[in-house]
Image (cartoon, rainbow, N blue to C red; front, side, top):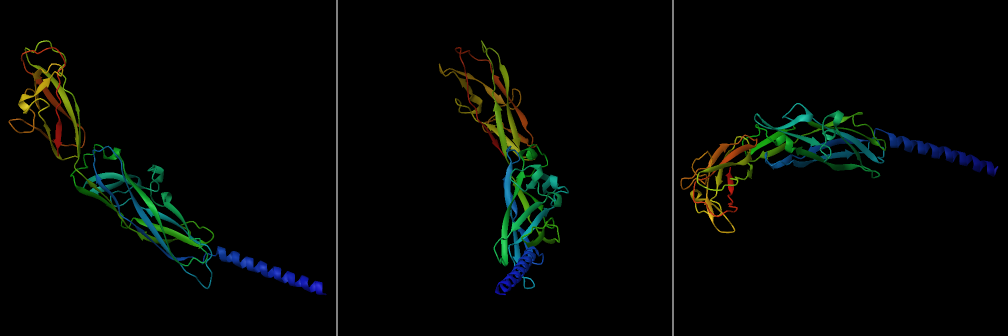
Length: 342
C-alpha cells in the first residue's frame, strides 16, 4: 500500500513537471512578450573637404542608433527577449535610384553611396527591403525589461573615379548635400527566444539624416622638361617645347608663374650652366612662340592665366636659345620652378 502510494505521487509529480515545462516553452515562444516600441536615430554623415582633382577616394561613417523598450504584458515574464529589425533606406533627395545616389548643389552633382560594410562593394549598397541592412538585435539578459540601445556603423564613399573630370563639379567651397528626410525607416518584429523575420507583424519607425561634402578649389600640376638637344654652334636661335599638365577644380581660375631659375636675378636673364666649367648659355621661356618672358608678371614678364575645366589641361612652354657666343662643349642645365595660384 505504501509503495503504491509513493508511485501515485510520482506520477502526479511527473504530470506537474510536464505541465510546467510546457508552460515555460509556451512562454518562451509567445509573441505577446515584445518590445512596446523601437525608435531609430541616424547621425549626419560628412565627407569634409573634397578635392575633385586629388585622385583619391573619400570615405566617412555615420551611426544608426536603435532604442527598444521592453515591458511585461498581461503578467508574463520576459525571458531572453529579442528583436529582429531591417533598416531600409531610399535613394535620398539627389536621386531616384539607390545604386546611383548623388550629392547636389543646384544642378551640379557628385556621385556617392552608402554601404552596410566597409568593402564598398555593389552587393553591400544600403537600399530598400530587397537590399536592406538587416540587423538581428538580441537583448539576452533574463527579465530584460526597460530600455535597450544598440548602435550600428553606416559607411559612405565618394569614389575617385566618380570625381575625375566631372565638369559639373564646380564652384569651389560649395556644400553638396543629400537629405534623407522621409527616406529611412526600420521594420522590426519582436518575441522571446525565437527570431522573427523583420517584416512579420512588423512595426515601423522612421529616421532622418543628411550627407554632405564641401568641394574645395584645388589644383595639381606636373611638368615635362624643355630639352634643346645637342647643338654644335649657337649661331642662330634654337627652339624647343616643354609642357605643364594642370588639373584644377572645374570653373575655377588659375595662374601659373615661373621663377628666374638658379642662375638669374630676373626672368629676362635666365641661363643654363655647365657645372664642370661654370660657363653659361642664355635662354628664354614664354607662353607663346617667341613671346615675352614667362615669369611672375613683374619686370615686363607674363604669366599664364586660364579657367579650369576639371579635366587635365596641357600647357606648352616655349623655349628658345638665341644666337650667342658658343661656350665649351658639355651639358648646360637650369632648374625653373612653376607655381600655380588658384
